[in-house]
Length: 117
Image 1: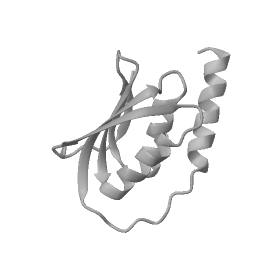
Image 2: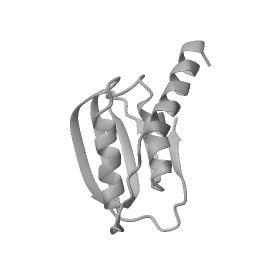
Image 3: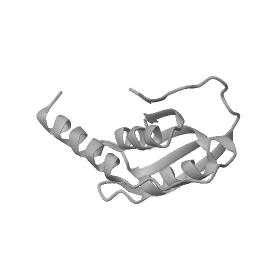
């Protein structure tokens, strides 16, 4: 791992852990596919998505797409998913120009949130 990537990853984790997570009321469990388009690769976007998703007790995965966008499948409370999306849209080191959100069927038994490499 390059020194730059290691420093960036440490910063991303530090930044993700500084976000204040509000107390959420309970909401229905949903699964959504979210595609973030813009300057979202090579800025720690997947790592930050993963860190925040784990803090919000969401499950699913996040991965880079060949067209330069990032795709996340998020499962959990609808309010928590909306909070995560807003966090990712507000990142200063990234620029989300377009957001596509699709409803998906819930995956029973899913327990983790992972980064697909």
